[in-house]
Amino acid sequence: MWIRILLVLATVAALSVGAVVYMTDIAPERPETALAPLDRAGERLRDDLLFHVEHLSLKIGPRNVSKGDTLEQAAGYIENALSSMGYQPQTQEWVLHGKTLRNVWVDVPGTMVLNELVVVAAHYDSYRSSPGADGNGSGVAALLELAERLRGEELHRTVRMLFFVNGEMPWVGTDECGSQRFLEQVTARSERVIGALFLDSVGVYSSEEGSQEFPFPLSLVYPRSGHFLAVFSDTSNRSAVVAFIDKWQTQSRFPVQGGAMPTWFPGSPNSGYTAFLDAGWPAVVLTDTAGHRYADSGTVYDKHSRLDYVALSHIVLSLTRVVADMARMGA
Image (cartoon, rainbow, N blue to C red; front, side):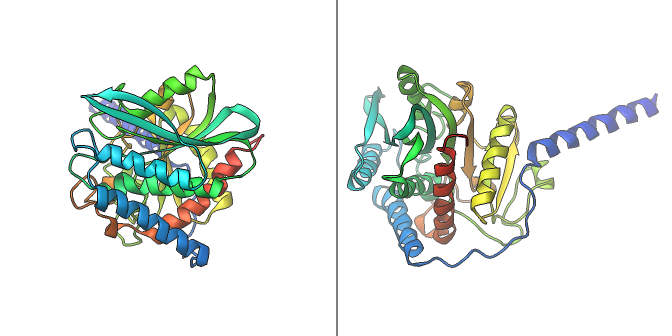
């Protein structure tokens, strides 16, 4: 009797370990190498990223439905920045609790297939009373600088850069989440998303041992230093994670770790990307793992001075090459 119980428990444990390995064993291990120093263009990018994050988190501050007109200020800042690049921002508006909210986006039009989209998205609201430097000023800043670098590029597919609202709790997973609202626009235009990247807290990095703390059982398989960019999605979307990491590692030396796990699994990111998954579109989250690396994530201490703008610069430069590659036919 006891032998049978032990065999059953051993089998369950083996299957559990196998499941965790399947979910997390995506990015091939590479030796950690120092990033190349930024050239002058990279240093300007670093300064521009700092400027965006500082403006959003310090000059505007906490940005959500309960914080006066700060969401409007953030949306206005994004629109003005995009307009100064030569874009004509488009918006989608709706009313919540008596306040007008809006998504903002711009396109780099495809030259061959107009109705196939590569979407890169970042939410511009912050959690409660947090100034939201990393969450998600870093994602917004990276997306603005991606827009600057893709401007005027001749791409086969359309790249749409979406700045959406209500990407924090309690709105994620509801009809008021900006990414969910955005689906209405895409569906109405008969467009098809062939890949979506959600930038959500991408500015904190450290090579110090113990700076990365995933919950069990992810703590058994991921590094204990927060020197990498994580690429996550749902288990049903594992192939998209693999494909993205393959592209990334041909274009960049910046370390990445991949994972494909159920949204309820401990350590899985809580993000507006799930709306795209529910629509059947491949979507992944790019993140520094937020609270699993950065104890001040979502707090009043999430300030612009805490971010690593050199690492973020390397990520934007790498992301520019990867997104351009995704927008090519045959990619």
